[in-house]
Image (cartoon, rainbow, N blue to C red):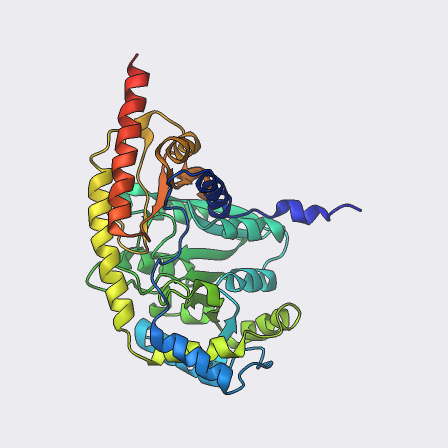
Length: 394
């Protein structure tokens, strides 16, 4: 027996491969600073955990509605309406096990072979993976460092064609930490307003930002709510990565298609997790505020440290919890440098090229680790960099 050819079209996330290598080195006694995995290093807030325990005791252990519990969908609709300045109801919400199904399901429902999808590059690898898997054509949109890792609007206009079926946006962004400026989003919305194009707006890091104003959703602009899928969830905001719970907010006609795909794959999302989700959205938000404040402190110290290392140049990320330094000054390819840092410095990070061709020349560090560990990583990187520069100078 052989696997179907389409399986060969699927990509993977390099973070898990790098984590495996790092764990193997640890098993041999090596000290490793883990800056590869994009997951908050904070515990899930206690009131959310207690809500899940209570739900288990109350018997929320059986199948629930495919679309999600009505109470949770209402809580999500209220949250999205308030935070995005739009008006949506529970009928627009699909609750799914993690954020990735809101990439997988809407793309399956919308794309035909030959359709074109504009997506951010460097970007979350699953975007390109799913586009190729479905036989559509990925059209990479380079993220420009000089624009805070936002699109070049002239290039975006040029890449829109009659075959463009979907545009993927992600802000705050993985891996760059960039946030799309309001004026850029408004310009993108204007270019798409009269086109038969859908937008997947990945807003999973919507609560993790360091500027005064929260990131703007493209749904805030006229005509865009009816053609946008908002992807958000609980993993990043509430340190609930293992709970596997995300959601999409989308037009009702697309909800019906996503529900069909849920029935054929997962049936429903775990009921007790959904009860915890209600507590997350409607309960105290102090833990989220404290987590973001700590991320900001780490960001400031870590980026300042990176910028003191020869060959590294790192812009201050506006959101998420990733630093994405330009490392072309080291004279090394991104993958070679990432491998060197793991093997020689004991710092586990990701090759920027793993996020797409325009990520070459960059490295991704997750600063979801303690401040002492981050400063230890900076010192280790500095020592290896100086050693490497001395070798190159010979």
